[in-house]
Length: 301
Image (cartoon, rainbow, N blue to C red; front, side, top):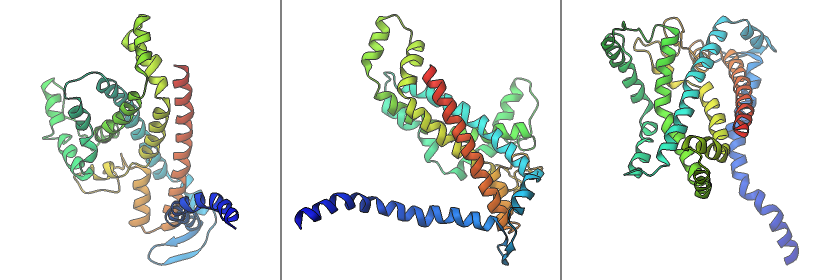
């Protein structure tokens, strides 16, 4: 009996230990996901409930919806403008922090401060910085003879402003991830490269970057998922109170903002659920593409 119980203990105990995670995931992750798919196949209004099965009609309407494609363009644009410079800047900051610096602990802790500040406070500050009439950015541009820019009004200008907000919040966080990975690279490799006459730039691209490849892949995938689900920063970047619409002409409305508008302003839960699943497909495609491209480029370097 003791041998029998011992065998069952070895077989069952690991599953019992990981079961709480899968139970929580099933209740708060898998079930909402499947339920959203079910709702997307119905004419479902938040106020009146289920109005009947419509099949793929919500998806068919979404594919010819110009507002959906506008939100998709804005989402991809904001993702590219904010994520690519952010990760490159984080890699550079990590390389600087990996060197011998005075008060290096203070510098390493300081770059994480933007990430712990309330996003609402960040949005308020950046809205004032990019204000058309009294913003600091336009004041600095005026010093070099450049006319004032209405940052909230234009497509490119609003995307640059929102991306600056995102980069300010998340560059330090990714830099610390890269720094932690760099700390595990054996110093003997750098010493050997220095003896061979390699410059710091060459050692960085030939030793550091390949050695921290798993961390780079992780940040690329996570940043892709977060960038394509961008909501809070653009939603709060409008002093005129059109949060959820993305400006007077929807010039920076993202897919998540369009989902929010349809679901909680128009109360069309079926259409909003279809947007959610289309967003899932977009995120999956971009995440896989970025993973493959980054893995190949890092390996070739």
